[in-house]
Image (cartoon, rainbow, N blue to C red; front, side, top):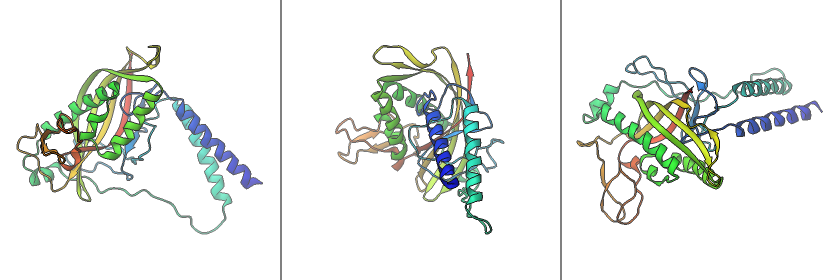
Length: 312
């Protein structure tokens, strides 16, 4: 009887969590911004295709700390940007229930505890520059800033296909599903007054067959969502400014080298052989074939929301 009661209570907690998360007003590309501020040394929102935790242990990161977090790969949830107190209460209840369940599962003997694998600390950025002499940090950071603006514009325009060129397939498909949910709801998320305030590399590492860079992006946006049928604002504000901080995880095959003219990655369409400026669009203008950047240059594989600060 007690065991059944505990299971029922745990189920109620899970349902409450789902209902609470569903009530949050989420916005901007990937649903990172919300109705209240978050982050700033506390929690953060992750999503992408990796499942491991990783930190910033490199000596060149100017004292910056990369907040540990697992990339979940789940779709439909960007960040917990709503009633933080409600979330805390639910988490506390869940922890109490789980603790009681463990106590009732038997006495004596150790319990198996799962610990997520942690990545090795980052490497000095000079390590990358030594094996790739043409790598230019400022050029890369400028490109990332432009890609952030491009991503917000594509999200607002509901035309996501151009983003395929700069993302891994997993991340592209995940965000495409979220955008499709907006389309199905007949809503448009407007992301305006976009300003990229700072971009900086906070980590370099080698993970398996890939080089990995983590770029921290500080931005300012205003965002709001409207109903396509009525034009009414259903969430957000046209005047409220959101100062958002993200970490972008970029991956590239570790044997790849930066071209002498890194401002333009020129490749050939694998279908018809036509030249393609892949930084402009991943779609061949001649035959329509989509080319993915990850085979040729740095590709965005995961996004981590670090913080949101609201002004106005």
